[in-house]
Image (cartoon, rainbow, N blue to C red; front, side, top):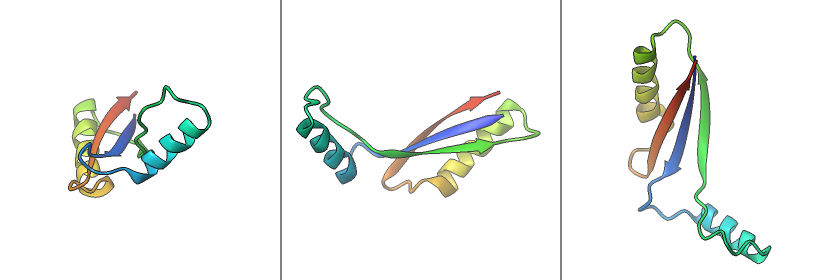
Length: 80
């Protein structure tokens, strides 16, 4: 089973990298793009766990290791 964890800054946290990318895109003529938020993606391979166990383990790893809960949030998906 594979998990994909998406980590992004909370909406209340300023994203200077995203703003820089959005400004560059606007300068290149992409006027319809109004906001860019940057983040990280982690792919995790899991073996020998039920779907429920995998979900619990990925959530714990994301909370305890992959994110800074003060400024970041996460979501994840599981694939068979």
